[in-house]
Length: 167
Image (cartoon, rainbow, N blue to C red):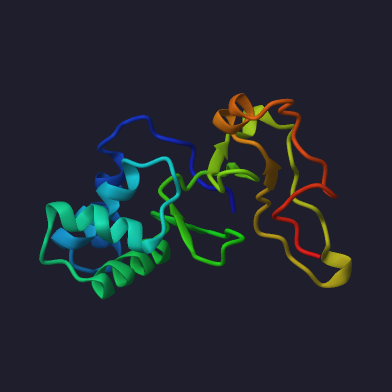
């Protein structure tokens, strides 16, 4: 199932939240609004703790546990995506349309790579092996734009050179 295309309207995530809450019969709470707004305003794929810290600045009564539960609810509603990161801490992304990520070998940043910047990646047909692929998402390793500028001879390391590579 493809994710919806990006909506440039900044109010769209909150409008989507209202619609999904109505559709699923769950309350539209201040905490849900605050967590989604905080996440939608970021590009850095924050951890749950980073989202909590951002929301707590505007909503001091929110607890860490509530923030985690709200993030789980937003993921279940399809409004937020939980993104894998080698640090084994879940990261969250309010961009729910299909796109890819680059993990910077130097600073650890997770950077969005829009599909238009990569060749089309089709869903493989693995039905002969009894596998049904729902989605394809690439995770690239290399240098983010900032680190590439700051690193002399900034050619991205090859797979054998990558410090984040798992043996």
